[in-house]
Length: 341
Ligand SMILES: *Cc1c(COP(=O)(O)O)cnc(C)c1O
Image (cartoon, rainbow, N blue to C red; front, top):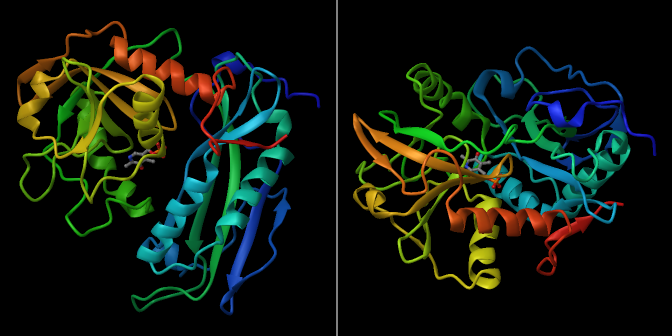
């Protein structure tokens, strides 16, 4: 398979059209067979449910080339399950989990020429998503939906080396108790844009959101979960019903416990406790872990001992182990690596 002539090491994180995408349509209460198609455009009614009432959701995952030359993806069954949970909350039809995984595999295989080579630092980002395609004018679930999967090659997240982030404690809330914070619904990201643009304008990389009810506990950022390391090397992560359950974070907790032999805890984390931690990182598919160097709460700075030039030692070990598992350098727990070809 001849790869595309792409400067992998200098790719950014942006959309680049690839050759094929998967499309399936839901109509009269059933999904059709679906197919790989070449046309990247979507044509829908002007009154489609997605356009009027934001009935849409998505997933994000990656395909990698391993050290021994296979193309693999990471725990796709968990993305399939999470999209099922999201669809149920949004009154959307579930795309069956086995079909979700097959659609991801088929789309990646059809775009093999865009899967970055091992060692380039780049990966093929995979975007499964679903939206209401038929017209609704009264507020109600649509009758027809489209499920799609496209891929786009993305560059190494830390170009020119790791740079710890500076984040601010946001004055905005991300998710209400009993709301939609735990699902990957498009609406959560539309309403986060003003908060992130504001944070960027003030010179911060990201927002830390606190729980909306009491504003005392740490939740997450707009697109990544927090991991903290205590001074005695315990790995802790916030527990809350309004956090999006990151697959990367759940995997890192397993890595911490089973590969690194560390104590792990998922529990409420009062913001007051954050200044006691030795390390802080953000976890998600995009970067695996981005180290946080500093958190600023209305002028009060919490600077982590790990500093502003490198990952903390435990964060680094977590990062190296999970990326080693993904790239086939370290043996994976059963079922984590799904070989595409
Ligand atoms: C997607 C997402 C994450 C990260 O989840 P992964 O499964 O690790 O990619 C975390 N928080 C939010 C709000 C997200 O949308």
